[in-house]
Length: 275
Image (cartoon, rainbow, N blue to C red; front, side, top):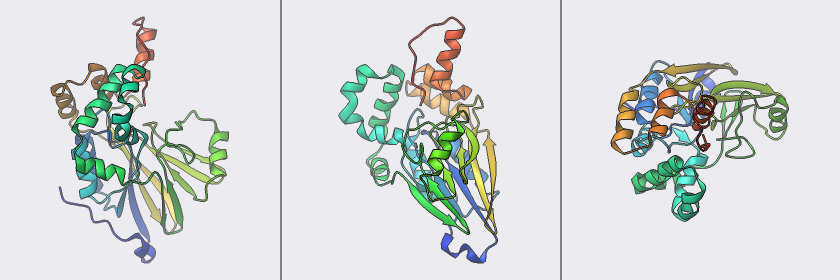
């Protein structure tokens, strides 16, 4: 792969147009990430911002981290990344308290990430503030208040308004809930780029956004990309991943969504935790 040149954004005052790629929730799905990185060449992006959760559920954690480093992406850490880092201290408790398939993913990640991947994650901040032209951006994983707060399209507008009143930036970029959407509240623009490696909207294709800032005005360009899903699924089966996790990635739905569908169909089972 040829690295995308990450320009110094402080020098962008002389340019009329700046393009930023915003990624989130890669979840160790390197084939999906590589498809996104190839797609970025169409836009001549000036920088890549990653909103966390590089790890989890997919079979290529180290490859995903290497690609982010190669392309000089600016990254924050996600809640799943933090849980993998904490696994060795929590594994006895989690073995009995967590959904078995989810526990498998934590254990597999802990065993397979390299020391270099672990050091990379340990060095990531939980939030970041960026400024481009006249726009200011707050990068978080869940919400400005909590790394694992799930903000969705159904979250009441008043909650977005509360959060808007507690930030200084004009745009909040966040992930965690794996679906692309935008909200405007309290003079703040909230943007979720969706998930690169594990969407939850019933569309298994990789999701990300390009932010185009022209003379201080922001345009959001959502992108959906097919990728070699068979490569990801094949490697998951080779590594012995539970079929439930494989199906989640293949159909673009969370474990909770799949469990609810099975329950409605009469196939009752213990509820899973989707995020």
